[in-house]
Length: 248
Ligand code: PEP
Image 1: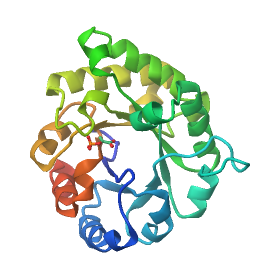
Image 2: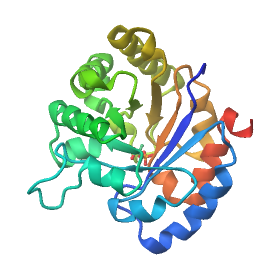
Image 3: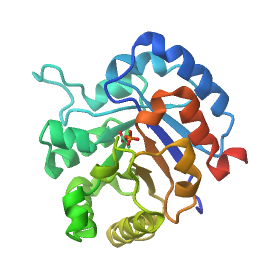
Image 4: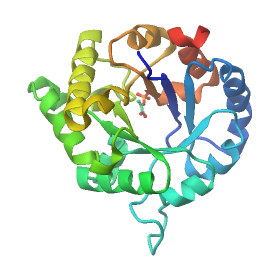
């Protein structure tokens, strides 16, 4: 859409060892010729430095809000950048759930990412309870307001990921995705005026080779954040190639 280059990101979550990089490297190298689409690979932190040699963008899956310090087991945005990452996912619903991360922490992480020169991919999305109660737009709007730091300007990516669609095989209807993406776009434009049109909004939640083309055709869907299906190189490649811009 317009000047927004589609972004298709694979999130390996806590899966993958060094040997698993062999196949995905070949697949990503082949897919990287579709240069009207930006491809992003987010392996676990242990594989970021090695994956940084691939001809696609590399991202972390989380970062600490501080640059360094006594935070055993954590990784800073500066460290990810130093390992070759260009993006970092923050506020994924699995982090919000498993680590109790509220919006303020997500915003602090996004701020740290920006300070380190990384582009934060800020995740938002409603639970099934929220959706059934008719609160989807309010919940997503509040998460956006609380998780996007003022200094981000247009230097961020938003991922709309309904919690109930992640890893479940369930996906919202095209109308439901369109409604939320349009509302996120409206809020971004309210926030940063015309610059809000430049921000890419990804859809995430059970994207598969079989539904990717339809999802990519929805207004204001500027790509996808793909979890489970990105673990199978052939499926991730099929999703990338399903984007209408991939053949350009
Ligand atoms: C995700 O991890 O961001 C995700 C969308 O997972 P899945 O594609 O497996 O639903």
